[in-house]
Amino acid sequence: MKIEQGLFSGMVLQRTRSGFSDAVISGTSESDGPLLASVSSKGKFLAGWKSRKIGKSANGKINGRLKGLPAGGPYDITLSVKSSTGRKDSAIFRDILVGDVWILAGQSNMEGIGYLKDALKPVSHVRAFYMDDRWDVARDPIHNLSKAVDRVHSDLNGGQPPNRKSHIGVGPGVAFGQEMFRRTGVPQGLISCAHGGTSRSQWDPSLGKNSLYGAMLRRFHKNGGLIAGFLWYQGCSDAYAEGARTYGMRMQSFVRALRRDFRNPDMPFVAVQIAGVASATHNHVFWNRIQELLRLLPDSIRKCSVVPAIDLELDDFIHVSGKGQNRLGRRLAQAMCELRRIKGSGKPQITLKSVGVERNPLSGGSDIKVTFDNVMGRLQSNGKPSGFTICNPSPVNTVFRTDLEKNTVILRTASPVTDIENASLHYGYGLMPYCNITDSEDRSLPVFGPHPVGVLRAVSRFATRLRVSKAMPSAGKLQGLPFPKNMEDLKLKTREFSGNFCDLHLDLLKSAPEDVLVYFACDIECSEQMKLSACIGYDGPVKLWVDGNEIFHDPKGCNPATLDQGVAKFNGTPGRHQVLVALGSNSGRAWGIFLRFVRHDVNPKLVRLGPENYKMPEILG
Image 1: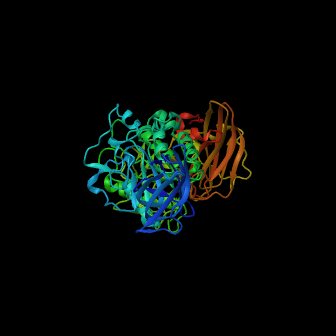
Image 2: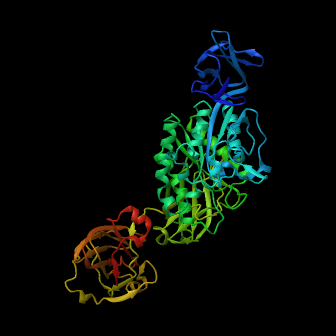
Image 3: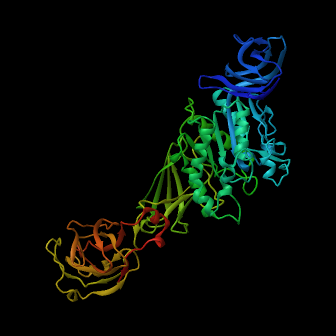
């Protein structure tokens, strides 16, 4: 008797939802007749498992199902076929466990390149199906590529079996299995399938049997055709222009193929968000793009979780250290338990909830508040919290303090709100950032970005070169103030203001406490049809006209002036438009105005790409 699929000494059989084995067994035998199974544990037969019929042998082929063994073990199993002529054929399989089995796939950080000095001690109930098609207790390295049965691993290495240095080999798999065993109490099996340096396209299901996907599928079927879930660490080899452009869509199709070919539409899928790389040859734009696409996978793939690794130390320029891999394995286990709704597993992975900005009244700068969902306990760091970068569009180094408050990070910056409200925020920006913020359960914040600070809009620069009138007699709250019949009567003079706030308080003080009126004027040039708003901040009664048409009036304006207190829409037809603002001095309490323009008909994707990708009105003093 020779069993080719479903049962091998030392293996872990996948349990069903009800907690029992259901493995498909096939092989060959010289005898025809019923296939019988006898199962013993600690030298005693299990009840109902002495010569139980589980299939048959006919025409030299064995087909059966080992169904109903409870989770646990170890079991010794004897298969036998007794023909009608009395001929008997049998085989014994020892040390069989029933529990949960996992596929481990991807590239080198799943394969394991961490230093072996940090390898965990083996646990007897955590097993691995090594790449030489042998089950044994799981000990790093579990990806013994140099002995791989599947030819693809040699083909990808120029026809020679891959070899690794003797001091490396720790991946996340062993730590994952041991943590899953601790959390569930049932045996764990790891089917090693990863290969270093491979791209997503090299895992394409369309490549056939002699491919990474084909080898993985063969190993799946060889072990009975059932698994509990799938672990994936890959993306580094796709961090280039074309790879990053299509990675998200290709991952969606990959997971659909997995669930189809593994005959499990609800199979949980846990990926690792790639860590950093210390390299001058990589482009951080594409690297960060892959990280962002991985972060967003759960938005398009159900029963999917993505585990960050950006805070883990490396053992070389790109590979997570042995110690880091052990932390990563435990994180993967927590994420998998949460997907499978195992009691006590905790919350889903940390996700970005919101990013907002507000003025800090004490420092005069701005505070960026970054709030996260699913934080377990509270956010914390070992030392000064690090990892956030503001870009506008290049990095702006104005964060002088980072505070952690439960599930919120507060970035204290030296920049006024007006300087960064249209900037973008990143966590883990660049190739090799220093990131050290986790929650109380050692789960890292995800790499993200670019994410708008506040509400991302197509907004112009501030109008700081304006034509300004002298102080004129009061018009009260401006209700009855018409557009000037003769603009020359205003005696406007061009003035360049040093900041975004067009400040006239020194001029207006000459008239205090007398209430006076002052005008500000500029022109804007539209190169195409635009849907616009004039956005004005003010500290006294105000009225605004565009091309002589009143579009905004606030008789109750008072200090302080704040950004965009008043927003008035108008149609920016191609050509030049006249903008005029009247401001009452509020008996000496008004100082000036903010003035800028927002365009509403720009595709949000172009807004995210930056102002060089769309047109705005040109402000002419």
